[in-house]
Length: 421
Image (cartoon, rainbow, N blue to C red; front, side):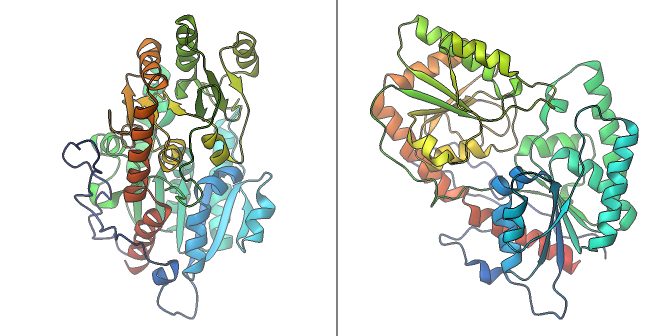
């Protein structure tokens, strides 16, 4: 196979500034029809042997919430689909979809050079057992391991960079050294037979600036996409005004700033609930502990409800969605909020500003600024009409640019380009 010649372009690059009540149009990239095609229309030409695709995903719950619809579309289009993740409670559901499942060992805590080498060796062994035509690997860490394995086995890859995370947010000596090492490794292993998917232009720019990838092998696709039939607008609930954050319990998600903003708002006399919905993540360098959360709850600043299966219901029970993150790829929680017609307060950082147009469907604030965050939340808490206007605009934006079917269509074209190369 030779390197794809197509110069993939954005499916949601920025257009001119938008006026209130309008939706930014797509100005480059693949055309997005008003009525996305049925998945059957994406089927491959008939062959004696169906192409095999292997999804390498960090864990089973992440696959289920962020990539299930894509794997279903590949299956329906005629691919043989294999899922490899760290196993958990979703394994049986994955098998029930008709997918082949392989456990993937990814050690986050107490990782050593030996365990990292063993992870790469395990992926090489998996390639040789499954013999996929394409490997779709998701998240920076999995792309790192998987690209080394794919270089050895000479299998084409689709590399989904879902955000640059802690390694690119922190700026200590250790992080700078690791970034340089990562760039060196990727420059060698991301050369041939691959397409790298970015969720925002800033992340792609960071890779291009470091000469990690070539632009003609990159594409911008708008995140995981949102199910606009599951996430639909609901009337505002009666009772206490509620601000909802849905994310893992990490400092990089801006949770400490939201807690401080809650303190400021309550000191000003505002009556509200701040609900944190998401799991602990002790393996992350910026993890928040359960003890810290319990302390905030004892002060009456937040309510922590843990990981939520029915996020749509939580959105129906809130008035405002907030994610004061330091950096994102393209957060599904904000896509879901927009589809559900909820106004959003988030930070003016990569990933978040792709979803919120300041003063149109939400408010953008600087990262790590609890006072400005409190001011923005107070503005929406005191203006029901503005909340409804922002919510309606967000729903319109989700339908125009961020549906699952749009993401499926663009990703399937990437698969087809690699198979035909």
